[in-house]
Image (cartoon, rainbow, N blue to C red):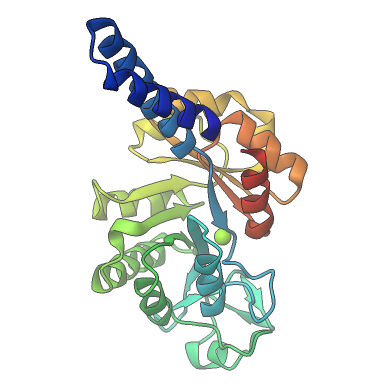
Length: 278
Ligand code: MG
C-alpha cells in the first residue's frame, strides 16, 4: 500500500509538470489515488492495551506504569477498570474480589494497603487521570464496573464525569460498560461528544444505535458467532471493538473482518504484526 501511494504520488507530480488538459486530468486522478490509499492506511485497526500494557517488566494490570508503558509503545488507547468503593472513592482495579477484599464493599483505606506486583498501590482514578493528562498521545478507555445497586452506579457515573472534566481529558476518553443502566446514565450526562460503548454482547448494532451509543465492544466469542455485526455496525454508523484478542490467528482474523479497535493483553505483539502485514 505504501509503495502504491508513493508510485501514484510520483506519477501525479510528473503529470503536473506538463500541464496539458489530459495530463491535468491524469494528475488529478493519480493524486486522488494518493488521498484514497492514505485514507485506507489511516483506517487501520487501533490497538488498545487491555488493563494497560501490563505484560512487561515493571508493570502490572491497571497500574500507573501500565498506562505509561502503553503510551511508550504507541498504543492508540489504554484500558482501565474503575470501581466505586463503599466510602465513595473511585479506584482503578479489575477484580470484584481482590486480595480477599470486595472492591464495592471494602473501605478505601483497606484497599489502599494492597501492594501490586510492581510495587504500586491500587491507584485512585484521580491519581490515574493526572498521569493520563500528561500523556496526550494515548486515549483512555475507561470501563466502569457494574455495581449491585443502580443508584450507586448513577453516583459512580457522575463522579467519573466530574473527574474527567476536572483533568480536561473528556475529548480523549471512551467509556465502556456492561451495565445498560450505566450506559444510559452516561448518555444523559454526555448527550454528545463522549463515545459510550456497550460490552455485554446481547444487543444488535441496530438496537445500540437506537439507544444512541457509539458502538459495540464485544468479546471474541460473541463476534465470532456474529461476524456480520461488524458490517451492520458500520452501516449503522457505529464502531466496533473486540476483546480480548491474544493469539496471532485471532488478531489477523479481526483485522481482516474490519473491526475498528482490538483490545489485547499483548499490544506490543499486535503492533508488530500490523507493521509486518503492511
Ligand atoms: Mg475491563
